[in-house]
Length: 219
Ligand code: GLN
Image (cartoon, rainbow, N blue to C red; front, side):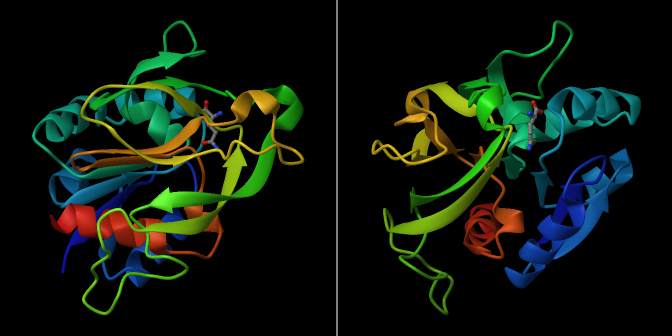
């Protein structure tokens, strides 16, 4: 069984662990370098990226985590976790740093103050249509399923490098509660064993994004 850590400094740790366990992984909370060293993959939950950045440094996790990402550790970042994985951020604080690894530019708090949070259904590539992976755990390449996505003061991906696969965008059609400027914006990406979403699948009761990550982590 694969062991997936969930960074347990801030955020929805319990929800991520539950989703990963129903996707067939063993899980462990990660707060110390020894715990990080023992995992086969890691989830960076949402929260406040500036706070998590500071805590990573205080807990002596920032450098070991950067090193493991360079070595190919599978990591899934949701919301603030997406910001932490990004090589470049817009709208960060002056001293904010990221772990990096994902060749994207992310805009923090991109959807604007007037719409702190919203929910919408998105087509998401790599998810079986309307359901989980089949019994063998396989999903046909390019299979697109609809996912109910919850955005909370979320970032979007403003720019992607050549090795980055776009998995989901905000639909182009206008919808109530979604700012017009968000149309077509990238909100889920994959680059090798790194996966990131602007939204929070762990609170929607749908475990398909976690199943996708477990498949990525198993290689
Ligand atoms: N706005 C937060 C940040 O900048 C992210 C919000 C979230 O993770 N839900 O880190």
